[in-house]
Each structure stands twice: as structure tokens, then as C-alpha cells.
Image 1: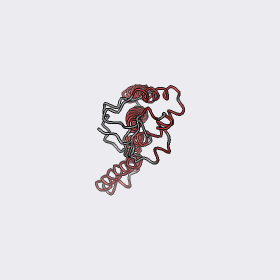
Image 2: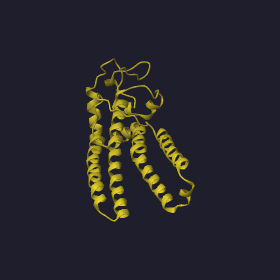
Image 3: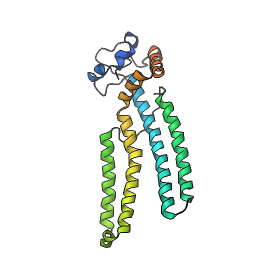
Image 4: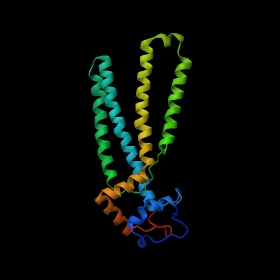
Amino acid sequence: MSYQSGPAPLYHSDRSLDYWLSPELSAITPTNARSRLRELASARGAYMGAWAAGIGVGGFLVLLGVVLAVRFGTPVTLAALGIPGAALAVLCGIYFARVRNRLPRTDRALVNRGPGNLRGAFSFVAFVLLVFTGLFAFTAKPSTWQDPAALLTLVTVLAFMVSLLVVGIIVPATIAGRSRESLRRKAATDPHFRALLEQDLATWRDPYGNAGYGPL
């Protein structure tokens, strides 16, 4: 792995953290240029997105349990789905708070096969919904479109699909796409997090050359 921070990289100790965090430096640096701060932001965003998706899925299970309990008139589905969903949401919420307030390890890659930005996430969600509705329209009998119960079922299924796609695709992609801005904002508003960055700046060395600590 190699790092790029411009034509003439400076040793990290020659510049302050504010310099590396500055939006102006980031604006004049290629977006694909690698740096320590960008690796931290990317890893932090990936972990936060994954745990946020877990929170959303947990909430989705609780909601599904409530809807099914009302639909079938029994609390069994609420207990079967709501309790695991609530536990999942709480557990993921704890880990989300942890990764949000700490510097992530960048030596362990977190595989993310989903869209890396909001635009890609919306395109993926639109494609999935288009395929699903197209298959339904192609296979449904003409009488189905005259059946209010069948149409209500379709609308309900679509609503739950949209909810699941939002929490599983759009939310993580949004967090990942804004990971650099999130790290910069966190460093500006959280003294403890900034102190962690300052300590990392003082001790980090590029193992592959003389790359700078930033830009972000």
C-alpha cells in the first residue's frame, strides 16, 4: 500500500493537525489521494454504517412484529420478532457509540460490498423496487388489480421493502459517503476525539514512505 499527499510529501511532524484537517487542503488534493486521516475516516464511516444498519434492522423487526401482531391478533409475533429486534438495536447502538468516539483500526479491512455513496444507494434501491414491481405486474392475474386486499398486501410489502432497503442500504451509504466531513466535524467539536487524533499524529509513521498525515 502506498500513500499520496501531493508532489512533495512532508513529514507528518512538520504540520499541525489543523493544517491536515483544513477543508482548503482537501479541496486542492485529488479525492483518491490516500492519507492517514482519510484511512481513519473511511474505516470509521464503514464501521458506523454497519452498526447503524444493525440498529435500523432491529427497529424494523420490532415494527414488523407489531404489524403482524395487530394483523393476526396475537402477541406471539411481537415477542418473537420484537425482543430479538430490540436486543439487536441496543447492542448495535452500543457499538455505534464506541466506534463513533474512538479511532478505528485501519489494519483490518471491513469488506463493504454495498454502495459507497448516497447516489449509488438510491440507484440500487430504485433498481430493486423496479424489478420487484415489474415481476409482480408481469405475473399477477388481471383480477388481482381489482382485489383491494391483494393491492393492500402489495402496498404493505412494498412499504416494508422500502424500509428495509433504507436502513440496510441508504443509511450505511450516507454515513460512508460523509465519513470525511463527519471526522472533521467530530475533531472540531469533541476535545477527547481531537486528543486521540493529536496523539495519533505524534506517533504515526508511514510504513511505506514519507507521506503526510493528511489531508482529509
